[in-house]
Length: 100
Length: 376
Image 1: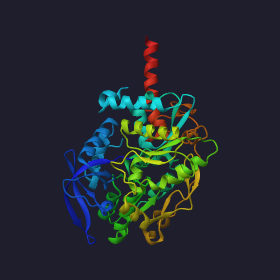
Image 2 (image 1 turned 180 degrees about the vertical axis):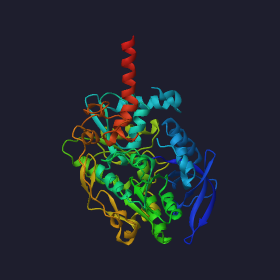
Image 3 (image 1 turned 90 degrees about the horizontal axis):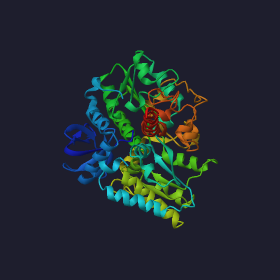
Image 4 (image 1 turned 135 degrees about the vertical axis):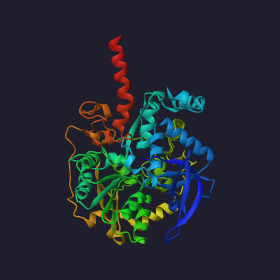
């Protein structure tokens, strides 16, 4: 539930009438869009790293901490469900989702 | 000490464990509560208890949102989901949580339209692509998750998506800690504060625990070394008769929290006068509801909600376990009627629940040792 997934910002977009910010992020090779609305007071730039929770970037972190966080997820046995979550963002692979 | 091989800086971990042993007064019994379910999972997974002296007892707190949700709320949500025009959307964590008539997944097998989403914004997307249906997002979570639900509601209103609503079960961590401290059968010496909740609320909301209750708090990360260092922090304070809030997880948690996330929550949510927590009962001002200005997107106002109250099965002692009065294995149902495969109580459903964590790591280990011993 409390998974925080590290990802690197690839590209930032403005969407919709309210020009909300989203970002294409890369999580160990998987690229999905996440929402940047919760970082609007401290907007990241492409190349920076963030922690992602339920499709929203929650906080900026260093690259070193991102590597540590991924290792923590692996050690906790949660890397697979983290990747499943990232792959599911945007309702992609919606029908093939495994319920664990 | 299986993790020592897999983890970085094993020598630092060993040194930190030695420091804990040095700091702990052998004449004293310490009860330290880790509030967050993620920490509970990590403590069992990494076998951290094996590194601690026997007079340090870790009490598993109420910070697993799936575990503290009363069954009646699941029944209420699933009652709305019975309507043929409704799509019930929730995180995967919710899917196996039992309601009186079965879990969301079992309802799906009976033909109810139940979908897994990984983000509240995907539930909103589901509403956009299904204009003939109403999508109800069954929202759970502490302050880590509530801001994402809040921003999704802001978007739904701004974009005029009228076939979307949120069944809000968001809870807040501070009143639960207060309820535990107020509970007459509880004695806690110090707290390991939640890591990711604190990225949102920061460290300031814990200050009363130090000032008024005289208990140390260390907000902690999730690596073994983080948790051990946090134990060192609170032991040092206890030894010096101090009580303050320390931030062990500075690399992620800003002292003041996340202002944009707090603003989003304040725009959309207000405190409920009271809310029921599984195991802890009714706690005043401990949960969020949707403000009047977003009433149209509030499932509870949009639909008739039965308002079901379900008492937990009498034999299940989730409440005592949740408060740390009983250890998971001391519950009468543990490992018998109640297992991760067939959970009776909510603490067995989520991997962050203390019963599931205990079952998966400690109980299976013991069972294996016993069966090897019996073969030998």
